[in-house]
Image (cartoon, rainbow, N blue to C red; front, side, top):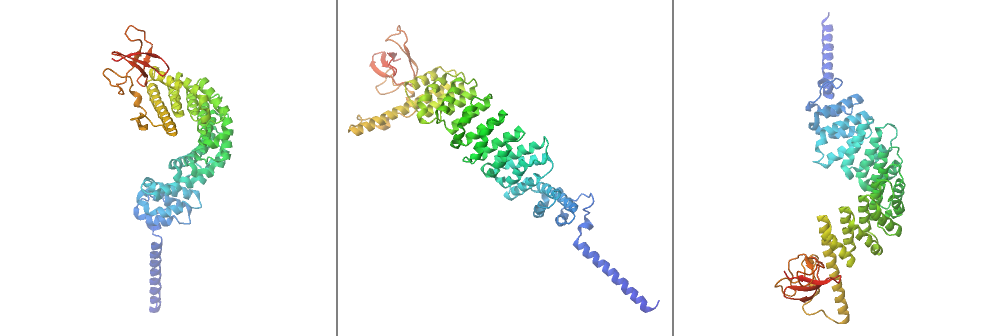
Length: 496
């Protein structure tokens, strides 16, 4: 071989070797992932140094590589926090398997940081929204439940939840659990989920009664109170074949308060339902709406006096506490009669209603006095006496104010030393005004129950003088005081 050919051969070989080395270096620099990390293998890629290359792989044209890259970042966990921006983009991938794996990785990386920063909470909302697209019913149900736990802050997920609620592409018993959870989550988001009302109204016709229950419950929590379409749908639900649905419809109608007045006829009808829970919630709803008509008031009175269920009677007596002022005199006798109810909670409810009315007369005073000293329940006794003192004191203050105004109008003035502020406050009447041994006029003695009889131990007992009473003193003797009670009973009490 000539020298010229040898030199040409050597030059060609050198060029080839140099080109191969150069290309190798370029490929190595551009895609070292394929040299150091084999994405197509089952290699455990948890090396933190691989994070930059894994982020690049999230953009690979091969979906299998994108999926494996996301899974690898998830396996690295919180140390892969720098990959969050790329994973966020991957959660918007055109293929659901890629979105799903990116969402899984995101949860592993930022799931425990939700309480530390609002931005991580927003990322988790996106994660659950992706999972609502899953074909796995358990994954969808759990995602809806998680969004519900977040409440109104997750309101941007409302469209995704609506889609899950109405998605009927899968017919299975388990899939109804997804719809229940979606309805429940929407309810927990409150007013911010009001765009879901049409979907929830439609869900009231679901074949699954649990879906109907959650839909009725959610509509009451979302409002708005002026939404007539919702009220109409809930009125219809009062006739649902399932008593749980009827109960939730009644509860939700009560949440609409005065706007629910168009449903009072339906709620009155519900007071005759075969289910006690439905009747109870119908009574509560009528109380919240406000009993303002004869049919409503009469129905509640009937429930109070005749229903066999104590919870229904309690709900009725509390509902009557919200009657329009012009009905208070009408319902008061029935409420007083409820002080004799066999159930202590009903008796307490009656006391609460009497207190709210603020009406004091002999009938009210005697009923509360009797209950305060004869009831079997200590709690009822205390409530009755406290209410009696409150009402009696309020009546005294009102009478004094009226007398003062009358005197001022006629030019008269109160007796010297007596002022409007001298009227005792509620509870001050707990001490009797009957002077004790050695007591001066105008002073009180510690409260006690004393018997009323003649001026001596041999006389028959006529009655009792209770601590909350202020009788009129007619005569004061050495050992006995002649008094007259407000009901006209006259007798003697011992100074001792």
